[in-house]
Image (cartoon, rainbow, N blue to C red; front, side, top):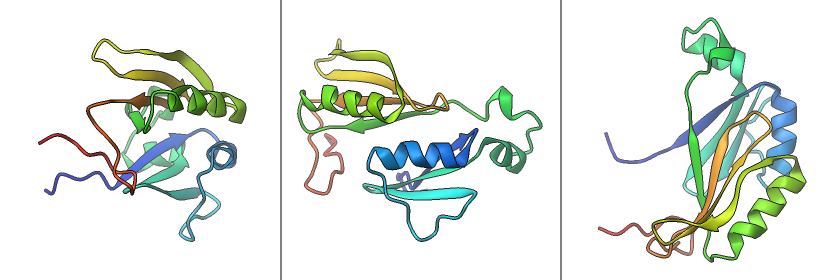
Length: 141
């Protein structure tokens, strides 16, 4: 297996509502999107929104309310100040702030946010992980 993340799929309660939320944040659907599933280019990965019920059924789980799995998505920014800017845009789009922007114990700055379906995103500035021009992380070797 090549060490790469290609697609992050979020099981959502209401696909149109989730689409509207992410599109208010600036995500643009690809031509592969359909009424029941949406795909967005997100830097080097794809974000997919699919019905939680359909996702649970695909995985052979009867109760989508029990959770298909827990996912933390991280969005790195180029500057410390951007964390607050993204958190404000998130809240304005209809998401919630779980933990407001604050310095981290490891020297970064982060906020924890949730989309309308409760998926948790960390918006983070890490001074040791700069972003390349294409938005990919420059991880230390």
